[in-house]
Length: 358
Image (cartoon, rainbow, N blue to C red; front, side):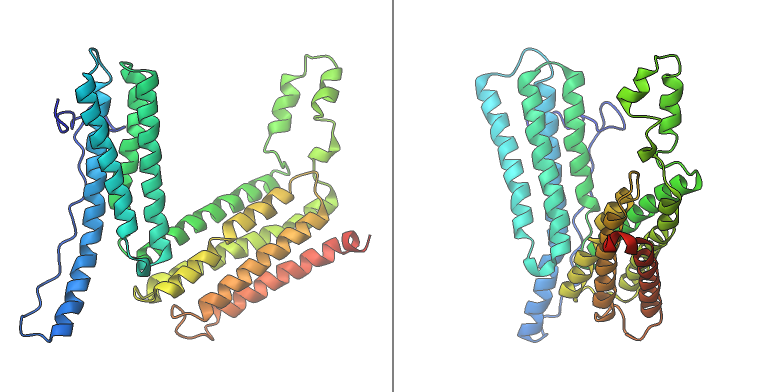
């Protein structure tokens, strides 16, 4: 079997289907030969950079094709000869090396955010291919097992054409992801508060399951009689400004994303990277705060995590205000958000002051 004979192996949408990738980006229009020499060189540099995404896509197509071939030939008997196996292994190895080379060929001045996305996609492909080979080695001729691992490689290769083409697009992609993470955390917190149930009905389910058991079961499990699993009145009062702070975090990320979308410039690579780097710290900080409000609640921990989140938010807003995405630094939305964040933190300090003094 040749390297391309198994190219009909499918991805998750169906058992066997063809693999199609985006075509390389079209080069820019040619510069007249009468243009000044340096202008011609500048234009050539632009054209060469436009080819990079296409090279990336083609490398992913090659990896996917080799994964297809390898899966087909090792999912049935008889297995290929030693000579054929060596050829298949070399082709897989070469395709992976080519994929890695694409990452290293991406100029650093294209932006850290874009490079991270390309690196992540490359690692997913390399790791997926390694797992596929291991599965084929352990369980040859078992197509059901092999197809699962193959689909992982196929999915990773399919993501490559979707990688942003420039650092601004990459920044918007990462910011959108952060907004969604914080939105999810905020909704979970709101649901728990509205139901006055920090574990969203989990305790009630356990109580019903154990209703016919002996009395000692509850003591062994530590629920539902353990009051540490419920919010006190003081806890519920403290949660209100914490929830407001998370809501302000979501608003900050949304406004930063809008500013990058409307005013961001592709050539301002370093500033976009700075905005993304600090904004990327908001979601983990929100998670830390959200986890700390679940019982048993340590008010001092809530205060510390709130302060950390406020510090990240203010830094993100200041970096955004000092960058090109905020053409009018006095724009009212940044001071308003800073005031909202300060108001939440001041209230949290008031409610946790006894913990600090004790």
